[in-house]
Length: 283
Ligand code: PAF
Image (cartoon, rainbow, N blue to C red):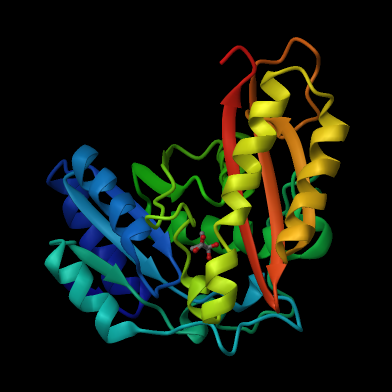
């Protein structure tokens, strides 16, 4: 596997692949790789000739009181997993390589509306940080395809929107959420959970499935959201939000919309978990 810490040699390699007519996929990550990331890599390999994984814990998407400093950094294990997957290139830049003049006055990419709702309410600046770094990664790697996990559903919708609005010639693929045997969505942040919290965590997906079923049976969206939040609280989680939205654009559903998603964020101690459940009102 080729490992790039700087932009110029990666660009040179990209140009060589371009000359050889090879299709290139990018899988952006913040490292601490788990089976969810590996499934995105498999998906990228299925549709492209060369796969580049980026590994960068992006400071721009963390709030001042968030977990940037303690975010798991497992570079050596990540490299082993990528080697085993026969990934062609790893782009693991330093902060200096990505933000050479500092973060303060750096140009930002902001996707209005989508960035302020749901997770954007309790994590102001998060989606701007994501949109900015992902746009930079797209410009650096110039992939034909980029693969993102559907677990971060709002992030996926934000990225699809920025690709459309900025006319970027990149196909965005969504990788299905990979779950533990008890239904908990895999996430690098699951490592923060204590044994007791880990036992409660699958409640998040269970409540979302129950809520989706209630919507299919005709319950009002507001009642379903309130009930799911109440059930999460009873189970020992601290819900941030539970909302039913249109899957395509996260707008409030109209009566005739069929493809919906129920999204939630909830805390276990200081760990914030997110998950979602896509469903069709007609089943
Ligand atoms: O989902 C993530 O891991 C990050 O938000 C991403 C897309 C790599 C941008 O830093």
